[in-house]
Amino acid sequence: KAGVTQTPRYLIKTRGQQVTLSCSPISGHRSVSWYQQTPGQGLQFLFEYFSETQRNKGNFPGRFSGRQFSNSRSEMNVSTLELGDSALYLCASSPRTGGGNTIYFGEGSWLTVV
Amino acid sequence: GNSVTQMEGPVTLSEEAFLTINCTYTATGYPSLFWYVQYPGEGLQLLLKATKADDKGSNKGFEATYRKETTSFHLEKGSVQVSDSAVYFCALSGGETSGSRLTFGEGTQLTVNP
Image 1 (cartoon, one colour):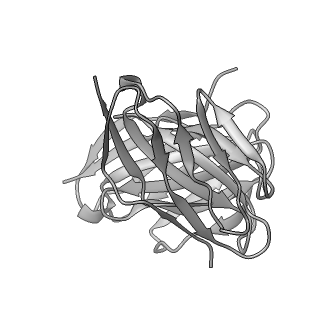
Image 2 (image 1 turned 30 degrees about the horizontal axis):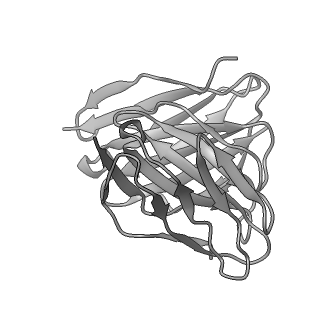
Image 3 (image 1 turned 90 degrees about the vertical axis):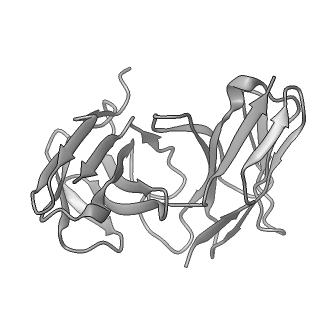
């Protein structure tokens, strides 16, 4: 069974640009979440999607957005990139939403903003 | 709100030494507790989980017991190997947050020397 797949793995963007990251969850998983990992802030929750609806949102500005498609695949977008957006962006999936579900992570997308 | 506190790192051990990484949490209700491991340049891998009080999660020689009376979920391994060198994250879901949102601790860097 394939794991959580994220693309691209590495990318470099210029300040002010926008970026779209893609995530394919494990087959059969309907919940997809996104996290940002930085050395200073650690792992921070961005948002969760379940059945194409945003279930939860973390404390990030509106420049960070996401969506989920009918096949459970998800994308997140960051507009007007800032240097501080440089981070590892992790996608995670689980069969259902709710506490107690086992949550599986992808390898991440490394974003560098210059 | 939910929070997780891990022991400060980094931790350096010799091969075959005993490992303990402390984790305590704050949450209402009955959260689920997890340990994730992150190897250099990779995403997060689920190491073990426990969903109710007194549950013991175990995997690859690692163990952790859900102690509600002390709000703790300490990670232990009897004999570490060089290959266990990684960053370990304690996390919880449920409690005051809905959905599958994970709240992470700061992470503990473990280095095992031969």
